[in-house]
Image (cartoon, rainbow, N blue to C red; front, side):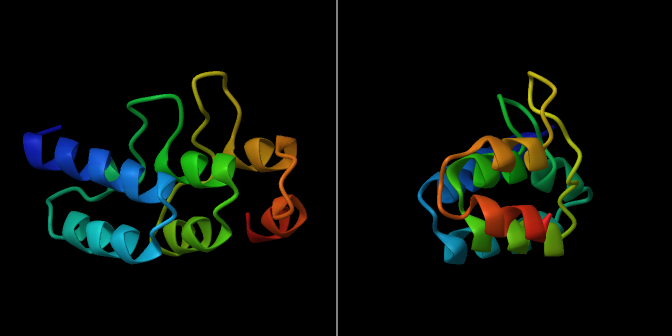
Length: 102
C-alpha cells in the first residue's frame, strides 16, 4: 500500500471506532478515487478488517454501509473469526440485529 492508502486505512479505523458514519462515508468516497479502493475498505493491517471493527463494536449502521460499499463479509480476524462470528460473540443489544445484516 502507498502512503495515501495507509492514511485512509488509519482514518477509517478511527472513524469506525468513534462511530462516525459521516466520516466513514467521507473516507470511503476518498478511497474510491484511488486505483484500488478495495485495499482500504477490506484492509486487515491489525486484528480486524474495517467491517470486523464495526462488528466488534456493535456499530450496525457503519457495518451496513461498509457492506453496501463492497466490504468483504468473510475476511477473518487474526484468530480466523469472520465478522459474523464476531457479531454473534458480542453481548451487545445489536447482536441479534447484526446477525440479520450479515
